[in-house]
Amino acid sequence: MLKLQPHYLRLRFIFVCALTQAALSLWAGGAAHAGIGDDVSLKGITSVKVELPGAAIKFLGEKKQGKSTLAFAALDEKNCPLSVRREADELKITRGLEATTDGSTGDLIEWTKRCMPDITLNVVGGIDAHVIVDHLLLQAQDWSKGLAVKMIDGNVAFSDIAELDIECKSCDLGGENMTGSLKYVIGVGTVGARGLSSSVLGRSKGDVTLRWARFKAKTTIDIETEHGDISIQVPASAAIAPVLSAPKGDIFLKKVPVGGGSSGASVALTTAIGNIRLYK
Image (cartoon, rainbow, N blue to C red; front, side):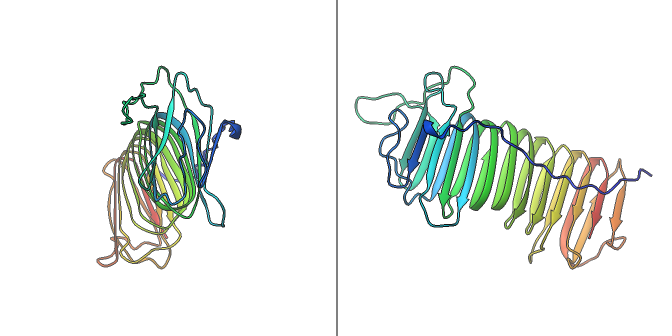
């Protein structure tokens, strides 16, 4: 039997972005830089949608009183023009739009090379965020509303957020402190998080290491990985009913009765090739 050492995956992604804030700033009630968008106000927005071929994004929540700000850096307006506009209460950041003579919305401009503009959105109060970016580096901190991400490859790091729903072909996901649910579908990549409080539904190919700080009522855990180890820690007081499957690996339990229990939160863990560690 292969003996595993306890390990805690702590993924900390440091985004080395030379943010030159002089490129652009939007203030609540202020106007945008010409060529990016005119008279775009952040006041009263309830959601943001970013849809780009590539970007390095920071979503930062601000609990104190102040103004919401939006800043850009590493812009290449010639090869990779951006459009920042507001539609009702939603802020949209996309590729640039073709100019029109009748005032209608033009077609999106194709980027002529691979660009990774830096985007930093600092919001007072919470707003929902929807990100569709092919090549993405994302950092979310103190984000009190929902965050949905769809990407091809990259990394996602979080700290003190509400909830996360992520889909990617190849990416790593890591962070700490989440009050709501976590959902992920990752083709290839590692998943590591601590300070969880609610349900997790995940499908991936790679190692998964998750730790719960609290166990809310009706919490469920449903994790499958095609190739990788699964390491799960729940609070000592958590009542769980585990269903574990590791046909080509071993199962290790610590302070969890052999055979689990018939009552309690559902904990379903499956790895096709790998080991499972479940402990309190």
